[in-house]
Amino acid sequence: MSDKRKILVTGGTGFIGSHTVVELISKGYDVIIADDLSNSRIEVVDAIRVISNGIQPLFIQMDLCDRNATLELFQKYKPHAVIHFAAKKLVGESVSNPLLYYRNNIDSLLNVIEGAMSIGCYDLVFSSSCTVYGQPDVLPVNEFAPLKKAESPYGNTKKIAEDILADTVQATAMKVISLRYFNPVGAHHSALIGEYPQGAPANLMPIITQVAIGKRESFSVFGTDYNTPDGTCVRDYIHVVDVAKAHVAAIERLHSAGSPERFEVFNLGTGIGISVFGMINAFERVNALKLNYKITDRRPGDVEQVWADTSLANKVLNWKAEKSLDEMVASAWAWEKALAKKTNSQTSEKGVVKS
Image 1 (spheres, rainbow, N blue to C red):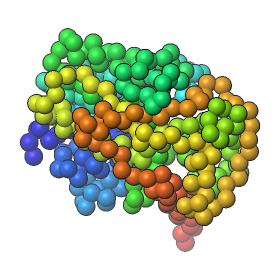
Image 2: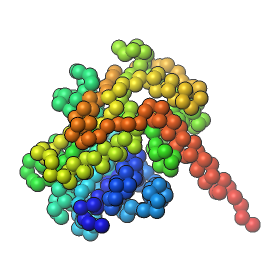
Image 3: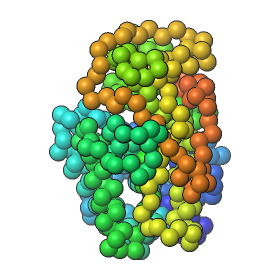
């Protein structure tokens, strides 16, 4: 396989990373994963192999904050392009330990940029976030909307990273596409890969599935007095497989000679705002379940409503989110049940006493 098909995916065993690796392999790319497994599990690599009909990505466990190790990674494997997911992502933890987030998320990016340029690898796709918009003045929010002060150090690392990449593009031959995700949910239809929340999940979907499976008794709906149709916060939920496919589209754009711009930003969403109650109702309807939740006061820092204008990605990347809300909640529930089955099986095996 030619080097032009060799892609380094940092954080490739994570939630979005693993789904992206599957899509890359399906398109014939040769994938190298670099991940420290701090927010993922090694069995994801084998799950990718099963989904991909026996094709397994090369996996290297490493800390990208280690500059020398990162430079060696690029020198040894010489990827043609990089998709950079690797980052810490817990908002609450970033508030209580900001230096950890700035050091990890920024140092790793700087090392990846330096490593890539050291071998003439100039194509990079960056994993950004809609957190850079804060509460937008106009909805739906497009890529030209003013960026607001971040609500957390985590969100600020995404803004700083985009600034670093934009400056790097100005001074070097590097080309970058930054993808600003809205709210990725769901899981692969095989239920072999999905989201492994570390500790108590902060996002709505894994909280819902954990209550449904019985891992937790109930969850809170934070505020029903917002200026929205049903009073609850509104978000743009997008299936993780659609997000993954957008990364393949971004790589293909970087590889083509068609782009006059060397730093581009695209929103990834469905363009449809779904409220908290809307998500709860969809989950209950599709999966024939009743969820136990309580209504509490607003949570400080929550954005009232945000959803994407995705017309730029639709036109320029020739990409569009295809999976419905029903597919999101059905696949998320299938993944949670598969995870419970796997956990129960492992627990049973540990409890077996051999004579």
